[in-house]
Amino acid sequence: MAVPPRNPPEPPGSDRADPPQDAAHPQFGIGLPEQLAGSGALDRLVETARGYAAQA
Image (cartoon, rainbow, N blue to C red; front, side, top):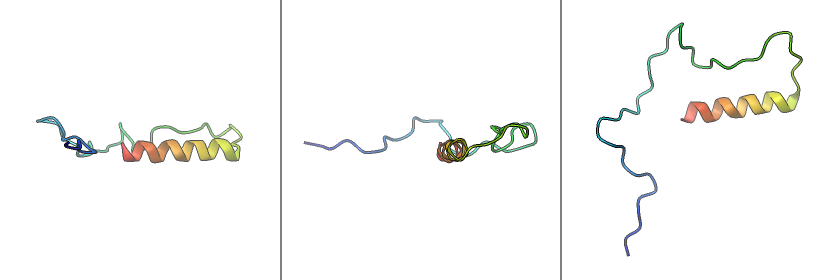
């Protein structure tokens, strides 16, 4: 019995290259307002979300 590949091939025409980054589309557009007091848990959550976004 054949085992399916772990990562199926991309459909034709799809491009996994990162889109160009410019001032209108910064790499990490999600941030917290400066006046918001950050907690350690919230900071870790934001860093985890940034890590997932960078891998996507």
